[in-house]
Length: 346
Ligand SMILES: [Zn+2]
Figure 1 (spheres, rainbow, N blue to C red):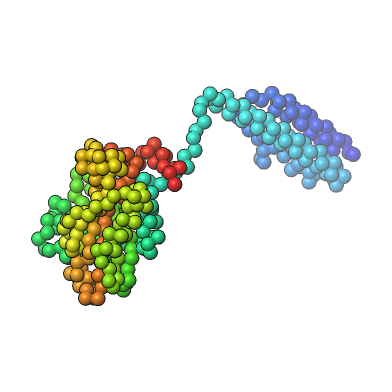
Figure 2 (cartoon, helix red, strand yellow; figure 1 turned 60 degrees about the vertical axis):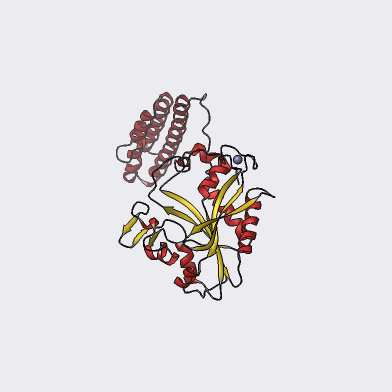
């Protein structure tokens, strides 16, 4: 080994020892960063400089000095890594408050109205119903005219309906999807139609300007009111309680004739009368009836050959009853403390 290369190897050993001492003494990560630049920096690093000058040495010396320089570089690199990891861990430990409660992971949950809609659709699916949806922005034709609403009907009023423009509006019920279904598919038809509806209602404990609805429609040859009563009775016994009492009261809707309001025995007092059922012993769950032949005619269905029934209910109100919510606005607040309760509900 020539004198020059021996000097360089000795210098590298000294650099390595010096770096080792400085790294061992460092108490800040910034200091380590600066030491890395001093010894290994690409431009002015002291070990790097020796490696760069190797080309000026003869081949023997180049080999000896190159090996020593690479070893020094690797050793300093390793010391810097270890020291940096130790300082990082110490900084983390001193900033963490180990007495703090662990943060709970929130798994996410389905909205109570979604749970009710899914359950209703599942029950009717067992009776052969398919779930369908339609647009929330509708035309007056689909929302009112084809459903047999006469031109002067109060529901068409600007005070009740949110119009988007002349003849277009945000649907006030899911019934336009009945029209779309009748126009798109020939009978037999069995569908459930869940979706959001819009009305000009002010917010209060029991009203919201946007709410969910679910309707059902059955059209076939020979469908009668008996079939309607059987299907609703089956649904009520599955959804509310086996053996629950159901009653039909005469009512009126433009698109069904005859029409009925359907009540089930109050699930809180079981018919005795309580504040929730306002002392009647019954709670109203839906409107229903036989599809008016005028609707069939407007949708191109042969009213001589086919009959059908339809029903509609409010999953929001049903969810309030089922989960004991006193204010409908709770369904819109997106408060995770409410939703988190339904994580295990399914
Ligand atoms: Zn009651």
